[in-house]
Length: 162
Length: 258
Image (cartoon, rainbow over all chains, first blue to last red; front, side, top):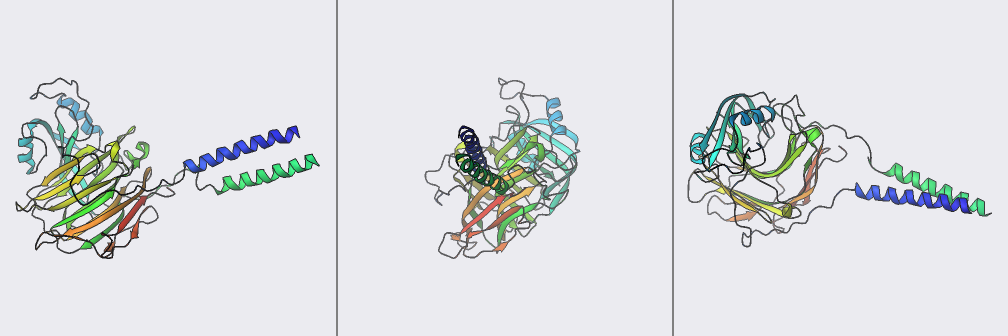
């Protein structure tokens, strides 16, 4: 009986491992909704902080001084396709400039969402820029843009210009 | 006798083990590709929409851990578009102009993935703008993000775009926007060929705002199903809106078997 017992133990261990593998790859349980229509008790609103993009060269740059160079911007933009852009990524950068949020808002006729005096980096490109409509087709532009926070390097906005 | 019993037992266990392994669905199968995008069109959607002039739209979308494997979702198409997957709500004028908001996952390199709250608009006589608000805080998963897009009652040509989650909120404005909204869409969008996954998310509290008096009303009908590839990105009514269930519950998930 010693030999079968050893085999039995081995097989039971295999079964346990298989069960664990099965459970670990099962579909996750859906999250439960706990929302209410009321805004009472919701967190206080915060301004946009963007998403990580350019690595700043310093964390101590004064308010009116960018924490990265235009070369840093060009390198990132050339090598990182614009999110949601459906066209092949081959942009020609025609402008990289540091402007206040107020100036960028005026340029784009859009609200950046960050304080007017905040220093931003505006990048304009030529090429093909295409974005999905709700119905699934695309709207295409020959000019595109990206806006970065001049201190954190985070990407705040992107899109197409007519 | 003992040896015989032992052999029978081993044979039974071995049979059970082999049958169990064979029954495991795709446990170690290489993922197949899906076809959800090319330059210009072709994304997959698990969405539903309602038609009719309204002043605003509202939904509560479960925040789930969307994933887009960077190796698959970065530069998947001819060195071009980034693959992505999102859960969102659109408020549009037909299929022409729109404001949208939600959360999305995409890769900015072959080693990194971003999951962020965003909103975007395409305005008449102006361009398309996407606004990156914040990465999704870890404390938001398992809860809902409430999204409200509506004409600002104080200013013409402005839309409020507000998001409230469990630990975070953001109030935004779509300015210089002259669109006349007449469609509300909600659900999931998928771009790419492989590497995305999304656990089931429920979208509840589907509401519309009256253009006459600004009052909010729950959707009472199932609208039109805009799910264009149910084999990959699936959406359906888990609870159909019926006038007494707060706009029903739309469920979407992806990408089973891929």
